[in-house]
Image (cartoon, rainbow, N blue to C red; front, side, top):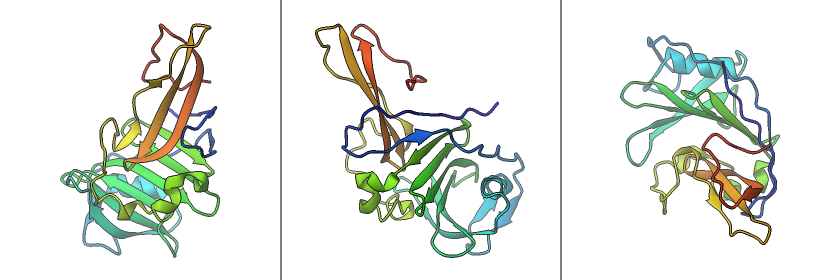
Length: 210
């Protein structure tokens, strides 16, 4: 069964407003491994990667644009151009096997982003991404241009997914505040806050409030 994450944001510590709602039902990638050559690149994408992209965009025509390997050489990032114009999709695959790992769709008209952990069948749908300070810094989340540069500080920052919960001090009522950050391509996607956490309690890795 596909797992979809819905988040209510109570507070953003980076002083930008954004909200997360229920995601689209992203497709389960096909399991074939036959390779298909894209129309714009010499690098091959597996049928499972192509099937995921085709299903995500409901059968719309797409091509593969620029392709780069992350600075550490562990992941291949491919631009996905839907129809014509600027790329809006970013497919992350294993460069040695072609296995699809992650996918991000950046809608720069609606200011939304859907980020998908394909293996875990989990996704986060973020709105008002234009309010994120990193949106303009990264040329409107043009991830193809940032993954080749080693991030300045990787301590506690995953390539994709949630970082650890961080806790504030206990107040006079025996409660504390917990915050957690979701990352895509080492960039801050969204920060969620859980208020009124008992001082003696630690939140689990799968707990997102609500």
